[in-house]
Image (cartoon, rainbow, N blue to C red; front, side, top):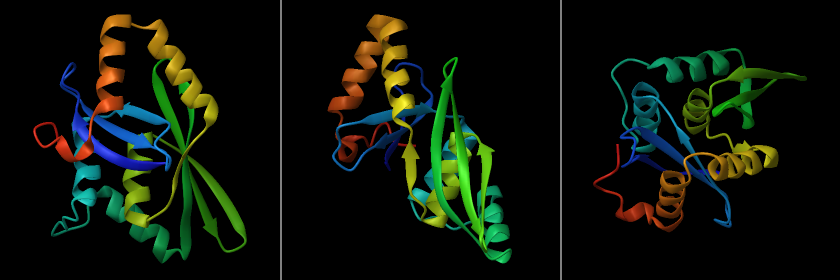
Length: 157
């Protein structure tokens, strides 16, 4: 999946990372904190800070250890909280590290690593939308499905 947009949810007034697959058949909105959204936005907009931010530091440490970020996987959704894993390659070893999705996405953008979402997470996310506040959930889902990321200037971070 690709990070298609980082927007402010007009209903909850919270940052949302929008992930979409290449065919744009599936999308996954992940609500994140303001600081995490800022870390993602800085990288998406190509802004360099005078000193390394936390995710830059993490990428630099991984690089100095001669390891690579192979991919990140959003692998679980439990009680409306997403979970992720960072997959690293260090020599002939593969390491899997638990992470918050927002941190994993910020690192993936910096390391130019692919982002994957388990199919079960997509299905559970859809089911959670159906079971939660139906009116707001449906209104937001419809808005996210129809929104053109190019036209989001007033909602962008």
